[in-house]
Amino acid sequence: MWRAKQLWRKVCMETSVELQLLMEKWRLLLAGIIFQYIHGLAARGVHYLHRPGPTLQDLGFMILPELGKERGYISESLFTFIFLSFVVWTFHPFVYHSKRFYTVLLWLRVLAFLVASQVLRIITFYSTQLPGPNYHCREGSMLARLPPPKSVTEVLLINFPRGVIYGCGDLIFSSHMIFTLVFVLTYNKYGSKRFIKFLAWVVAIVQSLLIVASRKHYTVDIVVAWYTVNLVVFFIDKKLPEMPDRSSGSQSLLPLNAKEKDGKFREDHRKLLNGNTVDAADWRQRVQVNGKHGEDANHIHSNSVVNGT
Image (cartoon, rainbow, N blue to C red; front, side, top):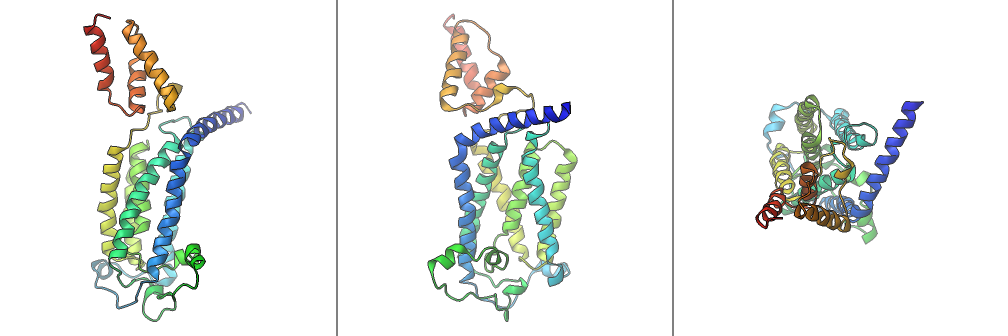
């Protein structure tokens, strides 16, 4: 009973903190979610341009045995497992005591990675349309070609979910691998279990092989995804301000809004000028949250000493 109350108290506390962040960042989160629909709309649009043809020569098709229609669900099942596992993990600070990140801030980064990768994907698959290797995209299939849309509404609704499942033409590069690699890279940075990090990379490799074996993508779609997504995440992660580390459990690590940031900065600056001490870890963290480097604090302190204060 006591543990249940303690857990409930923690969930309530985490919810209040995350809601505060959500109120501040909801526009960015909403923009990232809306772009997921735009990405689906673009994939639906390229299906109207798709023209079935002979399957292209592919090294992966030569090496990996074809799973067939009846086993095509295997790769989708694995992707569903990856997706749901990652979503559950991002909400674990609500329950467990390990506090390495804020869920809202983590999803902001994930959506930034996804949107950047998907923009490149849309540009790529509209540049050149390849004949789809999937069974419903081959010559003779009723789903390989889409008749011209009868209305704008038909295009905007994208025939969900059938239109998403049985799409053709959006090949280079694999959307499934975008999500998989973004999730794996994110866990490798913010996760805490070494074994799971290793296992995540193994699962990503298996997912790649299963997609090719299911003939849902050409091998080039997977290869391009591997180096493109890794580069996108690397460069965008360098540009984004680093998230505060919650592992110490300090409540002062909560990201502050603009007014609070300015007040805290002035308060600590005043303490330094008056010769009072400021907790070094706390100062570094606030400077980092404000998007500045740790050297700023040292520079202010140096000036204080030089001025004799």
